[in-house]
Image (cartoon, rainbow, N blue to C red; front, side, top):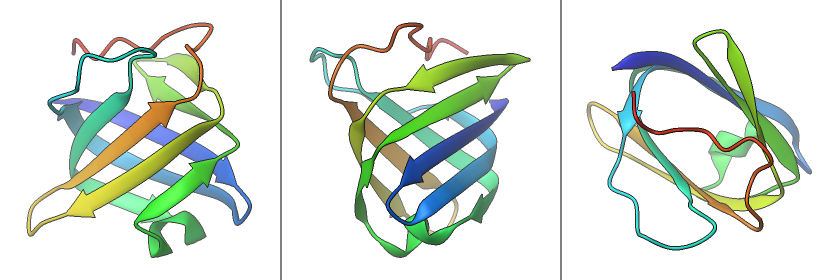
Length: 101
């Protein structure tokens, strides 16, 4: 697990999730989606009121580096321990984020 922060911007403004994260199983499609599972997380913003959402833009902050998220569609699911974020990119990111923690 690694410390990770995702900032997403949509019609409701800016929303974030940060905490301990690891890659979740991801389908082998292009552009490669981002599936991440968070534990011990903190969420802020209105985006989390919806289970499915449109993303205008965003970024992933990991290990002192930033990775852009282009326009995308997203979903999230939550159980008692973790929240899984799924981001389906509409195009490949200029600087793709590596899910290999």
